[in-house]
Image (tube, rainbow, N blue to C red; front, side, top):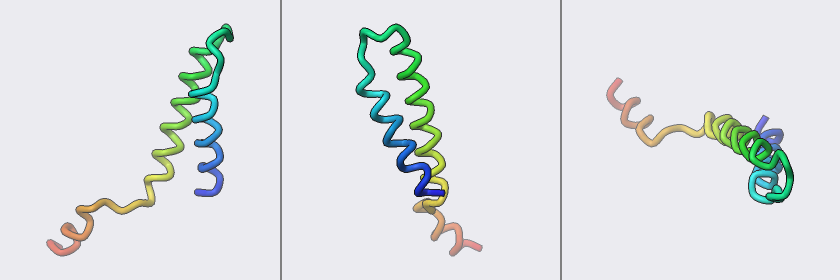
Amino acid sequence: MKKLFIPIVLIAVFFAFYTPKEHHYAIYIKVVAIVILMIGVMKLMQKVPSRNQEKEDDEI
């Protein structure tokens, strides 16, 4: 799953930063690209454990 989200995030970053301003729908493309970027990063970070997880395990 991680291999799927990394290229999607990179493509979204490309479209978010390099969409020409002369394009009629440039703002919409940038908004959609940023939303896809945020969802992709959220999905990638789901598997990363938090720093406080060790402390929570010790308390139990």
